[in-house]
Image 1 (tube, rainbow, N blue to C red):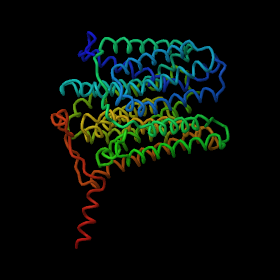
Image 2 (cartoon, helix red, strand yellow):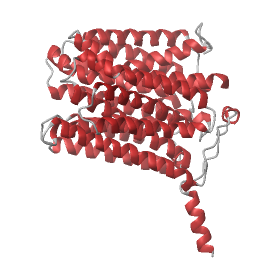
Image 3 (cartoon, one colour):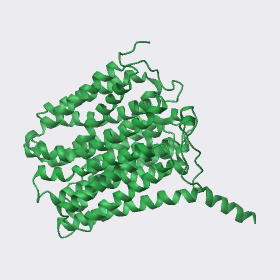
Image 4 (cartoon, rainbow, N blue to C red):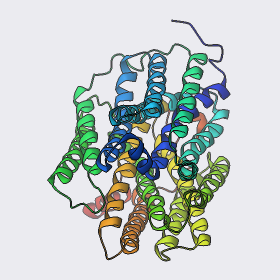
Length: 489
């Protein structure tokens, strides 16, 4: 019970383990779309089978956020991390050696599921398990590893397509997963269940499982140039309804698995709105740009056009480090959304964009995502006590995953199936992205005055001491006060 690995309290080793656990799937999730024709050719897969593999892997990622919290309550947390990294290695090897569709599907689904299990199991302890002086560095590392990895996905896909291959990428991913497993052993220390007295929540897990699988299965049926039928729309609608029922059930539960009620005050809602808006628009915007440009450039040239996205993520991470513990954290998230909107607008108004316009736009999108999502996660997280961070990240990541991985295939379907040309379809989808990002930004901005609060500075000492980093007023608190005064007069 007291065994510890030789690097148990070594911050660089623990941080590297977290990065190695998260990056593989995040890179593959972006790189896989352009690689699917090559994978399908080599494995004898149909378009529907490749879409199903991607959809179920994304369902696994969304489901893992809920499942990880449930398992952490009743089982030794670090032992579970060893299990998760082991399964991640197995899944990555399955995908790399696959010679038939089923082995690739199982391997890729394991990659998605284990990545989110590790995200919820490993990231909060990295944040709260070390002194407050490490928090800013941790936030920057998370920002770069998550969004830097995503930003490098198109370039990595271009390199693989240029070589007419895909297995080297999956072997590298398997190697990185093996590093995560090795470091999870070296940094091992016994951590018991988070709350053995917690109520088991089979209903919540069942709703999350059924909802995610049904919704993402339905989305996987949105194939280009194919008429939608009940086989696509019915599971998508059913899955979304089940996810909504999950949220309602958890909100009203006496002892919920996902702590939704405390997240319904002003500042957590701001964070959730920003995170969902950025995820729902950045992922499809990059994919849509590739659709309209792929016939004008070689795969490698197209991948290089997305390199400024990584540079933008690096710039955002550097600025984030300076503003992380100040009230500017709130403004930074909103500036990130404005940068994202600017990048999408630049592409949408100049289709097909020139090389220079594409480079500028992808850079703006990189800055936008890096400056919005991670700050939004902490805006939500600082509003609750740090011992609730796992559950906060779980619900935010569930909603973000649904927004990012579900809206992108729908908008890609619109782009390739609506309008007189592919350019018209892409333009329509990009304008939808632009409207979603703008609406989310305006709503987030409006919630501050409606809640009667100005952006506060987080108190790190208070947060690490077991209290919240700031006080978040109820939603629409200012309107309610005005209504009360009016009724009294």
